[in-house]
Image (tube, rainbow, N blue to C red; front, side, top):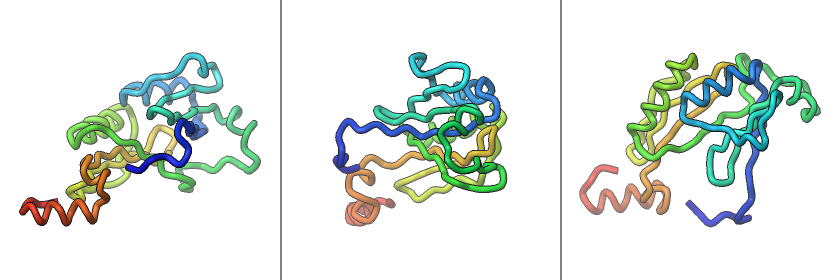
Length: 156
């Protein structure tokens, strides 16, 4: 989309889970794997991008890092987690896998033409969105993409 301000910077999102093994199995059914060098009985390092990772942590391990009480994701939204896939069909496939693995649908599919997404809640109630964006829209931005598609006579 744009050049990163800090090339090579890594992102780690720490997420408390009630049952680590159950959460690992859930996300494995969505196609994710774990880095064994940073995975043990209290934590699992789940790569979600080239330099982006979700750390699934037992609630006890998470509490060691947190300075405030842990929110209940079934009653309070603290963050929404979104990741991209390579096609609209993959959005539907990953969303269906999440539901089949015990997740629940958060809302209906959202289709903006240049971007398509579905949302679900994981086993702990954390909100996730799986999305696809047309590579040209990601490069140009949605308004420029829509204008170029309109100029070409195709719907954006």
